[in-house]
Image 1 (cartoon, helix red, strand yellow):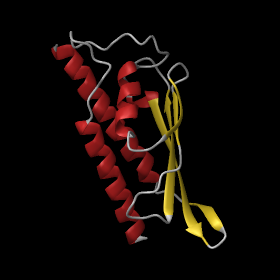
Image 2 (cartoon, rainbow, N blue to C red):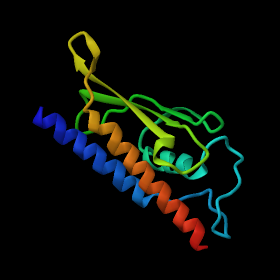
Image 3 (cartoon, one colour):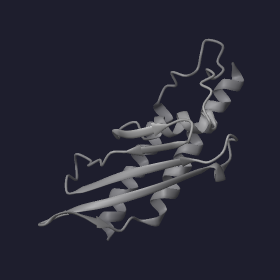
Length: 143
């Protein structure tokens, strides 16, 4: 159990650091977000993509506000894999406008089997995305 918590903490930290260091190709020279005419909050959308950029995407629907990743195994733990679904629920930059679902599997002798996810993992991911979205919004306002 302690090892599982440490792995989740490491993944959450990696997600947070990735969110802090990502660049934003949707910001034009004026510093304002490019008008992508998407159906959800542009800062939450970009921040979600920035935060989970290390995971391969299965699908991303900017009009419906849903991002689904493929299964991802961290190189340091090939016997565990995770998959995310990010839901952006609003056009406003609000904490309740975002929901992250995390799925986890572990390798067994019979193949991959579903496993419990630490309930804090979704919250940590949501917080990392919200922090990145605030950074993007502030950067856009400063320019």
